[in-house]
Structures are given as structure tokens and as C-alpha cells.
Image (cartoon, rainbow over all chains, first blue to last red; front, side):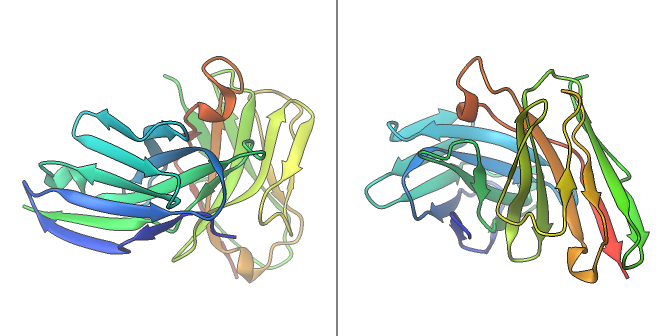
Length: 112
Length: 117
């Protein structure tokens, strides 16, 4: 079953703008991770936020986590054409942290 | 270079013909996992392995087998492939210890695109 669901499914913005993607999940989690996938390639880990954290930054990335709403957001600031990719959230569920469950992804297109 | 490799990268086969997709990692990771990716469904976990000789079912294990005889290798076996197994397959690995087991990022292979006719 799908644990994480991203919103929107697709997002198109101009270079320099900020991109925000949201992820909702259903059960208690140990952590939530964001991954990026360029077309036809493997996934690359971007950032991890633990269940006791509310916000985390890494370069142009900002992730928030609201465990009361079971949701997370990924903000990419000052987007570049090279940020064009699919972005997935993945959750490590509490009590079953051996598995990572992925959402269906947001396709981000950054127009030059 | 630290990496996860998969072979083959592309495979077209026919229904019922047994096949194996190999996965190898050179990072000495304990945990390895197989996923399939289908349009609109994201990645779904097929099987995972916490260490040598320890394997467990993921969310969609039907029609697949795995083995973990060596730490670095985690082959995915389709004994009798069917068209609904046409998909993009990814192998991934991560450490189980150190910074925190499930808090460690997963490293993904480049993918294997399988078509079953």
C-alpha cells in the first residue's frame, strides 16, 4: 500500500522560482526521506528528517515535517533547469523501520 | 567508486522463461533491497535483506525470489515471468549499523528495464 503521497503530481516553474512539493503519509514514522530521480535513472538521496525534527536545511533544500498532520514539504529555492527531475518522499515506518515506503512522486520541470 | 551495479540494464524476454537480475554493491552494506517502479505507483518494495542469509518479503513479493549468499550480491529471480512483471527494477543498499540503521540513506543502482512478452 502507498504510505506516502506527493502533491502535486506535476509542477512546472520558471528558473529562479521556488518549488514546493508536499508529501502526506498514513502511519507513524521513524523518519521521512526525500529522493530525486532523473529520467530513467536510479534514485539519489537528498535529505532525511527524523520524526522528532520539524525542519531541516541542506543547501537550497528545506524540508519540514508535521507529524500531527502526517505531512512533509520539500522546498527547492532558486530553482535551476538542472533541478528538473522526479522527487519522491519515502517513509521508514515506526516498528517496521526495515522497510522504506515510497510515494508516487512529483515531476518537477524547471523552464530556462 | 562506491556504487550499486545491476545487470542487465535492459531485458526483453518471453512469458515463462526464467531470468535473474543481478545486483552487487561494493560498500559493505548489510541491508539490500529490490523495488519495482511502475507509472503512477512510485516504487514498491519486492524483497529486502538485512544481512547474509536473511531475507524478508516486501509489499509485492509474488512471482519473485531472492537469495543472499554473499554480502555484496542480492540477485532477483523470476522463475516464470509474466507480462505483469514488465517494469523498471531497482536494487538498493544501505548500512544497517553506524549512524542509525533505517536513518541511513539508501544507495540505488541504475535500474533494469524488463519487458515480458
